[in-house]
Length: 144
Image (tube, rainbow, N blue to C red; front, side):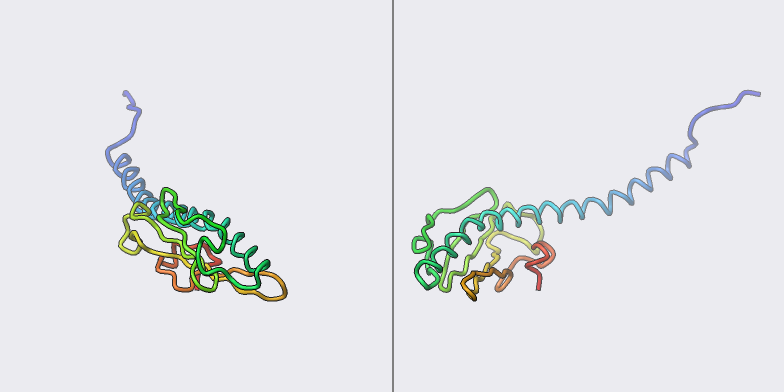
């Protein structure tokens, strides 16, 4: 009697079903990960703006109300960020491009705001006040 080596059709179908389940879990998780990385790019871009606003507050005694008053250029942008703007009270608003993600919760024009507070000669930063980016995409320190 001769034995046959190899996989049966049932074994192959089980392996394909398991791979399908794993992919159904992995693809949405990866999509969220890439959007989170793009949101973080905006927060990293704002780090220099935070420094400029902090220095302006410490040297002049009040928060700047514009990019120029903070010592920044008016055109701050990157691949996924269309603008970085300083407004009254030193609030930095990061505006994202449409390329950031193709999810209904995250379209171009969404913003994250970084709000400064001043106490004991230091500037502390908070975020997500007025943010239009879904909480699952912002870093943990920015979630409500």
